[in-house]
Image (cartoon, rainbow, N blue to C red):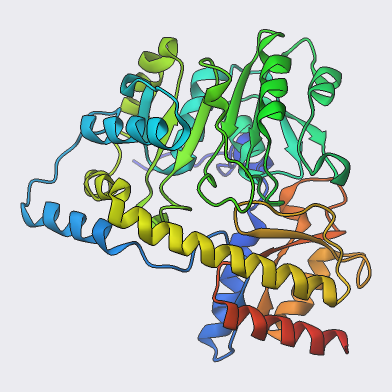
Length: 394
């Protein structure tokens, strides 16, 4: 007997339809296609360090895999890795963090999903910055919440203020999700700013989630964690950026005591556990010899930032807020174009340089800005700037 045909074809959920594409990934795919066709492309579009994973980390993974016993871990992560992360907070920040509050996750994205899954109910509003990391608002939407944008600009170094939190807080607001160092601007929240934002959120009965995945990559400014100001904040971290482990897909989440069990239940169901080989590899990320490698690379990122910043300004771009961390420069292109998406396409097609248009990061003047990532060598950055200069006819 033939099964009845459905009267209509299946359709994607509204959730899937309402989530915008991550344009930088599509731009990178286009750049890769041009490379496959024989073009030389200078990649300044994606937030991935070009350095290889440090050798001690690779060696630790190899040694673990050689034993052949690759099984699930606890959903919260390897106990010894949770202890190592807690020790890192004591050493690096002077913060006494119980290992019981550390949850090892499947990348920083997994940490964001677990935090929001534990906190967001349908209809809840969460404050995010515009410009800001695009996946934040999409993750909130995935849990049937609503992202409420705070437009941030050069006057506050593209970071939110307590006054803005107060002005945007509504009856259904449940918390805020901010980042420092920020993507796409590279700006860093100072200690007094972290304290003020924490008070502004928690005094209203809300929860602050701070994305600190670019910690370790700061240049000339003090690096403070929100955990110094609150034991109720959630902190998202990752082994991807400073630790040069993007493809290993490993991160961590620091949660208040009361949320350990709810987050554990979510992790059990959503992920089972983080990658076991990646966790054993990450144990070597905190070794002195690994940290020495990473600090040398941080110095190289600082030199790249200084070079690229100078070159962009020499060519006539405006950088309205000094990038102090991560590996991005958020540049005003209005001297050359009123459409960053079209300008990015022209830059790729005519000059063979890939950079990210502002439309990925929100609705606050997105066509006025582009993000340039200094995640390639200074030699390649110089080549990219020479091509850009030729394209501009300068």
